[in-house]
Length: 265
Image (cartoon, rainbow, N blue to C red; front, side, top):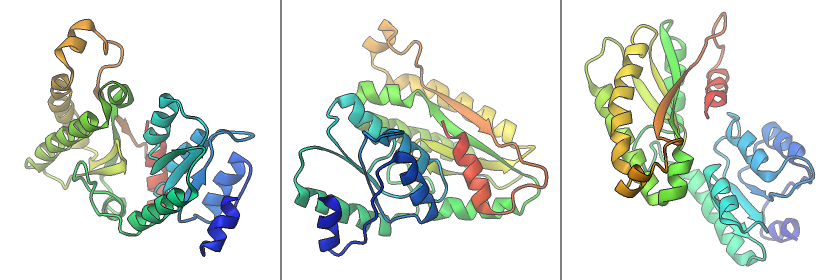
Protein backbone atom coordinates (compact mmCIF):
# COMPACT_ATOMS: atom_id res chain seq x y z
CA UNK A 1 0.00 0.00 0.00
CA UNK A 2 2.74 2.46 0.96
CA UNK A 3 4.77 1.51 -2.10
CA UNK A 4 1.86 2.30 -4.43
CA UNK A 5 0.85 5.47 -2.55
CA UNK A 6 4.31 7.07 -2.53
CA UNK A 7 4.95 6.19 -6.16
CA UNK A 8 1.74 8.03 -7.10
CA UNK A 9 3.05 11.01 -5.09
CA UNK A 10 6.17 11.06 -7.29
CA UNK A 11 8.65 9.32 -5.00
CA UNK A 12 11.08 6.61 -6.07
CA UNK A 13 10.49 3.68 -3.73
CA UNK A 14 12.48 0.53 -2.94
CA UNK A 15 10.98 -2.12 -0.66
CA UNK A 16 12.59 -5.14 1.02
CA UNK A 17 11.03 -7.69 3.36
CA UNK A 18 14.00 -8.71 5.52
CA UNK A 19 16.01 -6.58 7.94
CA UNK A 20 19.40 -7.79 6.72
CA UNK A 21 18.39 -6.98 3.12
CA UNK A 22 17.32 -3.52 4.22
CA UNK A 23 20.68 -2.79 5.85
CA UNK A 24 22.55 -3.99 2.74
CA UNK A 25 20.31 -2.01 0.39
CA UNK A 26 20.86 1.19 2.38
CA UNK A 27 24.62 0.72 2.50
CA UNK A 28 24.87 -0.09 -1.22
CA UNK A 29 22.79 2.90 -2.30
CA UNK A 30 21.85 5.18 0.63
CA UNK A 31 18.26 6.42 0.32
CA UNK A 32 16.99 9.84 1.34
CA UNK A 33 14.68 8.34 3.98
CA UNK A 34 13.76 4.97 5.53
CA UNK A 35 10.27 3.87 6.63
CA UNK A 36 10.81 0.93 8.96
CA UNK A 37 8.62 -1.66 10.67
CA UNK A 38 9.80 -3.29 13.90
CA UNK A 39 8.48 -6.82 13.36
CA UNK A 40 10.64 -8.32 10.61
CA UNK A 41 11.34 -12.00 9.75
CA UNK A 42 15.00 -11.92 10.83
CA UNK A 43 16.50 -9.05 12.81
CA UNK A 44 13.98 -6.55 14.18
CA UNK A 45 13.60 -2.94 13.11
CA UNK A 46 15.46 -1.66 16.17
CA UNK A 47 18.55 -3.63 15.12
CA UNK A 48 18.19 -2.35 11.55
CA UNK A 49 18.10 1.25 12.83
CA UNK A 50 21.06 0.60 15.14
CA UNK A 51 23.19 -0.71 12.26
CA UNK A 52 22.22 2.20 10.02
CA UNK A 53 23.12 4.72 12.72
CA UNK A 54 26.48 3.02 13.35
CA UNK A 55 27.60 3.08 9.71
CA UNK A 56 29.20 6.19 8.25
CA UNK A 57 27.27 6.07 4.96
CA UNK A 58 23.85 5.72 6.61
CA UNK A 59 24.23 7.48 9.98
CA UNK A 60 22.34 10.62 8.93
CA UNK A 61 19.45 9.03 6.98
CA UNK A 62 16.06 10.01 8.47
CA UNK A 63 14.23 6.98 9.90
CA UNK A 64 10.47 6.78 10.51
CA UNK A 65 9.14 3.79 12.43
CA UNK A 66 5.65 2.62 11.37
CA UNK A 67 4.58 -0.20 13.67
CA UNK A 68 1.77 -1.72 15.71
CA UNK A 69 4.00 -1.76 18.83
CA UNK A 70 2.40 0.89 21.04
CA UNK A 71 4.17 0.30 24.37
CA UNK A 72 5.94 3.33 25.83
CA UNK A 73 9.19 1.38 26.15
CA UNK A 74 9.13 0.49 22.44
CA UNK A 75 8.55 4.12 21.51
CA UNK A 76 11.39 5.28 23.78
CA UNK A 77 13.71 2.67 22.27
CA UNK A 78 12.87 3.90 18.77
CA UNK A 79 13.48 7.53 19.70
CA UNK A 80 16.73 6.63 21.49
CA UNK A 81 17.90 5.23 18.15
CA UNK A 82 17.41 8.76 16.78
CA UNK A 83 14.31 7.98 14.77
CA UNK A 84 12.76 11.11 13.27
CA UNK A 85 9.29 9.85 14.16
CA UNK A 86 7.46 6.84 15.60
CA UNK A 87 4.00 6.23 14.12
CA UNK A 88 1.69 3.47 15.36
CA UNK A 89 -0.80 1.53 13.28
CA UNK A 90 -3.52 2.23 12.26
CA UNK A 91 -2.35 5.59 10.95
CA UNK A 92 -3.53 8.36 8.64
CA UNK A 93 -1.58 7.97 5.39
CA UNK A 94 -1.82 11.70 4.69
CA UNK A 95 -0.21 12.36 8.07
CA UNK A 96 2.60 9.97 7.14
CA UNK A 97 3.09 11.84 3.87
CA UNK A 98 3.52 15.12 5.77
CA UNK A 99 5.98 13.49 8.19
CA UNK A 100 8.00 12.21 5.22
CA UNK A 101 8.02 15.62 3.53
CA UNK A 102 9.08 17.37 6.74
CA UNK A 103 11.84 14.85 7.47
CA UNK A 104 13.27 15.19 3.95
CA UNK A 105 13.15 19.00 4.22
CA UNK A 106 15.01 18.94 7.56
CA UNK A 107 17.63 16.60 6.11
CA UNK A 108 18.22 18.97 3.17
CA UNK A 109 18.67 21.93 5.52
CA UNK A 110 20.75 20.19 8.17
CA UNK A 111 22.49 22.75 10.41
CA UNK A 112 26.24 22.77 10.97
CA UNK A 113 25.83 22.60 14.75
CA UNK A 114 23.57 20.59 17.03
CA UNK A 115 20.37 22.47 17.92
CA UNK A 116 20.52 21.40 21.59
CA UNK A 117 24.22 21.59 22.48
CA UNK A 118 25.53 24.06 19.90
CA UNK A 119 28.51 21.74 19.36
CA UNK A 120 29.70 21.07 15.78
CA UNK A 121 27.80 18.43 13.84
CA UNK A 122 27.75 16.86 10.39
CA UNK A 123 30.01 18.61 7.89
CA UNK A 124 32.02 20.46 10.56
CA UNK A 125 32.90 17.18 12.26
CA UNK A 126 33.92 15.64 8.93
CA UNK A 127 36.17 18.63 8.22
CA UNK A 128 37.81 18.39 11.66
CA UNK A 129 38.43 14.65 11.22
CA UNK A 130 39.91 15.19 7.76
CA UNK A 131 42.25 17.90 9.08
CA UNK A 132 43.33 15.78 12.05
CA UNK A 133 43.97 12.81 9.79
CA UNK A 134 46.96 14.55 8.18
CA UNK A 135 48.49 15.59 11.51
CA UNK A 136 50.88 12.86 12.70
CA UNK A 137 50.30 13.51 16.42
CA UNK A 138 46.48 13.49 16.36
CA UNK A 139 44.68 11.41 18.98
CA UNK A 140 40.97 10.62 19.14
CA UNK A 141 38.55 9.49 21.83
CA UNK A 142 34.80 8.89 21.78
CA UNK A 143 33.11 10.61 24.72
CA UNK A 144 29.78 9.21 25.92
CA UNK A 145 27.45 10.25 28.73
CA UNK A 146 26.86 7.02 30.62
CA UNK A 147 23.34 5.93 31.69
CA UNK A 148 21.69 8.79 29.82
CA UNK A 149 18.85 6.50 28.67
CA UNK A 150 17.90 5.74 32.31
CA UNK A 151 17.92 9.46 33.11
CA UNK A 152 15.74 10.16 30.05
CA UNK A 153 13.31 7.41 31.03
CA UNK A 154 12.77 8.94 34.49
CA UNK A 155 12.95 12.69 33.78
CA UNK A 156 11.93 12.95 30.12
CA UNK A 157 13.36 14.61 27.04
CA UNK A 158 13.23 18.23 28.27
CA UNK A 159 15.40 17.52 31.33
CA UNK A 160 17.74 15.44 29.17
CA UNK A 161 18.17 18.35 26.77
CA UNK A 162 19.01 20.62 29.73
CA UNK A 163 21.65 18.13 30.85
CA UNK A 164 23.16 18.00 27.34
CA UNK A 165 23.32 21.81 27.25
CA UNK A 166 25.14 21.88 30.59
CA UNK A 167 27.51 19.17 29.34
CA UNK A 168 28.34 21.19 26.21
CA UNK A 169 28.93 24.41 28.18
CA UNK A 170 31.40 22.69 30.51
CA UNK A 171 33.17 21.05 27.56
CA UNK A 172 33.37 24.40 25.77
CA UNK A 173 34.90 26.06 28.85
CA UNK A 174 37.52 23.33 29.23
CA UNK A 175 38.44 23.32 25.54
CA UNK A 176 38.65 27.13 25.52
CA UNK A 177 41.48 27.11 28.06
CA UNK A 178 44.96 27.71 26.62
CA UNK A 179 46.45 24.52 25.16
CA UNK A 180 49.66 23.72 23.28
CA UNK A 181 47.68 22.14 20.41
CA UNK A 182 44.37 22.60 18.64
CA UNK A 183 41.47 20.80 20.34
CA UNK A 184 38.04 19.86 18.98
CA UNK A 185 34.81 18.27 20.17
CA UNK A 186 31.76 17.50 18.00
CA UNK A 187 28.82 15.14 17.67
CA UNK A 188 29.10 11.65 16.24
CA UNK A 189 25.56 10.92 17.47
CA UNK A 190 23.18 13.01 19.63
CA UNK A 191 24.73 11.72 22.86
CA UNK A 192 28.18 10.58 21.67
CA UNK A 193 31.04 12.92 20.81
CA UNK A 194 34.48 12.79 19.27
CA UNK A 195 37.29 14.57 21.11
CA UNK A 196 40.45 15.39 19.14
CA UNK A 197 43.75 16.55 20.58
CA UNK A 198 47.38 15.41 20.53
CA UNK A 199 48.52 12.08 21.93
CA UNK A 200 50.42 13.96 24.65
CA UNK A 201 47.63 16.36 25.62
CA UNK A 202 44.59 14.06 25.35
CA UNK A 203 45.05 12.24 28.72
CA UNK A 204 45.27 15.59 30.54
CA UNK A 205 42.23 16.88 28.70
CA UNK A 206 40.16 13.79 29.53
CA UNK A 207 41.08 14.00 33.21
CA UNK A 208 40.12 17.67 33.34
CA UNK A 209 36.77 17.02 31.65
CA UNK A 210 35.92 14.12 33.96
CA UNK A 211 36.66 16.20 37.08
CA UNK A 212 34.44 19.02 35.81
CA UNK A 213 31.59 16.96 34.37
CA UNK A 214 30.82 14.18 36.83
CA UNK A 215 30.19 16.42 39.91
CA UNK A 216 27.89 18.61 37.79
CA UNK A 217 25.63 15.65 36.94
CA UNK A 218 24.59 15.41 40.62
CA UNK A 219 22.57 18.63 40.31
CA UNK A 220 20.19 17.05 37.79
CA UNK A 221 18.76 14.46 40.21
CA UNK A 222 15.78 15.37 42.39
CA UNK A 223 16.36 15.25 46.17
CA UNK A 224 13.86 12.40 46.44
CA UNK A 225 15.65 10.24 43.87
CA UNK A 226 19.06 11.11 45.28
CA UNK A 227 18.02 10.05 48.79
CA UNK A 228 16.16 6.90 47.66
CA UNK A 229 19.13 5.67 45.63
CA UNK A 230 17.02 5.18 42.50
CA UNK A 231 20.07 5.81 40.31
CA UNK A 232 22.59 4.02 42.52
CA UNK A 233 23.37 1.46 39.81
CA UNK A 234 22.75 3.84 36.90
CA UNK A 235 24.64 6.98 37.84
CA UNK A 236 25.35 9.53 35.15
CA UNK A 237 29.00 9.58 34.22
CA UNK A 238 31.31 10.18 31.32
CA UNK A 239 33.35 7.55 29.47
CA UNK A 240 36.28 7.95 27.09
CA UNK A 241 36.99 5.22 24.52
CA UNK A 242 40.32 5.92 22.85
CA UNK A 243 40.76 5.03 19.20
CA UNK A 244 43.69 2.70 18.65
CA UNK A 245 45.26 3.76 15.36
CA UNK A 246 46.16 0.85 13.06
CA UNK A 247 49.66 0.45 11.69
CA UNK A 248 49.91 2.95 8.84
CA UNK A 249 46.89 4.91 10.07
CA UNK A 250 43.64 5.43 8.19
CA UNK A 251 43.70 6.18 4.47
CA UNK A 252 40.46 8.19 4.35
CA UNK A 253 38.24 10.23 6.64
CA UNK A 254 35.41 7.73 6.06
CA UNK A 255 37.55 4.89 7.44
CA UNK A 256 38.39 6.99 10.47
CA UNK A 257 34.78 7.99 11.12
CA UNK A 258 33.46 4.45 10.70
CA UNK A 259 35.89 3.25 13.35
CA UNK A 260 34.87 6.07 15.71
CA UNK A 261 31.17 5.24 15.18
CA UNK A 262 31.88 1.66 16.23
CA UNK A 263 33.13 2.98 19.58
CA UNK A 264 29.83 4.80 20.28
CA UNK A 265 28.00 3.12 23.16
